[in-house]
Length: 219
Image 1 (spheres, helix red, strand yellow):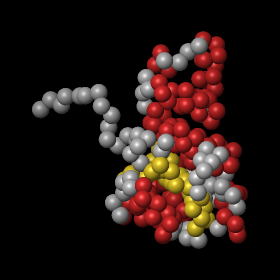
Image 2 (cartoon, one colour; image 1 turned 30 degrees about the vertical axis):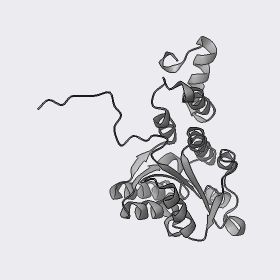
Image 3 (cartoon, one colour; image 1 turned 90 degrees about the vertical axis):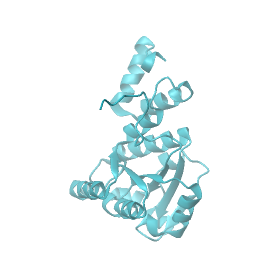
């Protein structure tokens, strides 16, 4: 039987309205011991994700652990993207065991969840494993996560993939939200975020626009 192709996106691709982003424990104390990724790159990727989600209106939960007593404030790159967002502070290492977070997940009501945070092997594995057990469709932005060693991070990512989580990267997340350069209403938003936090790709956008007035897709 011949399969007929149609110009429609795959169901596993993310859109701004089909998921909730959960950003976990992007805090000073957690970052100090993170060795699997450079701190400046971690902050950059967290900013890219946060600003992308905020710009596209993605439902987002921001949660911290022991903010006042131990772990310190959440990265300003995230809180500045969500200036009016309440931070849900926890005592549990596993975000999924916190009643206030679960209440917010249920209030929002999305069956697809995207996670990013510190540390990969503890505070990301815990809620990812728990959410999958309860039937949620789970994604992890792996380069917006970090751990005390490369070994710890990589084994955690492997474990989550084995459980059924789908790995992706921060720039991939942003571009998947946009997905078509003909979407003019978010074109400047996406390229602006990429120019600021998109690394070499952002430099390329700046160069092309400055030198040639170029744009993706002939926008």
